Image (tube, rainbow, N blue to C red; front, side, top):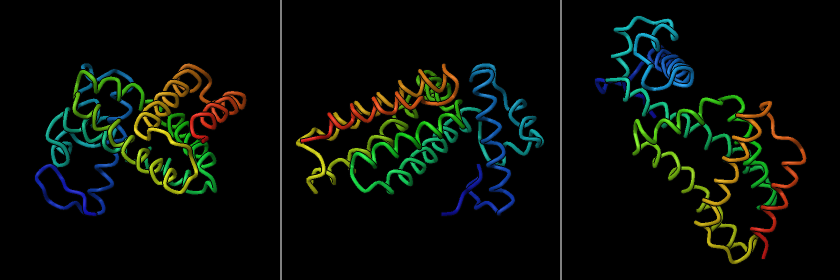
Length: 199
């Protein structure tokens, strides 16, 4: 899939690299100072590029913020899907997916602050983030129900409830803790998920 600049042109390999640097810098700046105090100057300085370069890739501060939400969402979903696909049972898949989510948020703690800012900066992107996370989750639970791997659950309610559990536990132990989820928390989470999914 080709990546385009602000003017709709397909980016070269070098352009893709520069755009990625700007997104990485934006992630850091929005996390450090918040959306209101962030500026294109701060983002370009953090990326090590000229201010004019920014506008080759993004139209505005909100544009780069929205793209950052999409980028983080894509990467966290990819990490979770890749990990959960290695599970031999639905419970294993769930726990591997949660583990990937916790690792990602440990490496990208800015995810929490950026998603919370989206509520005020770009409400449509807040909804986008959670709807995209939920869509694949609901589909996976439906497939597991069809195979008889889980009980007669409501896949949508279950997906949103377990997403909430993962987000709150990540906040408690990664964001406000030492950056890791303790073994006893993982064990308790496994017990809860088992109870939710079993017939």
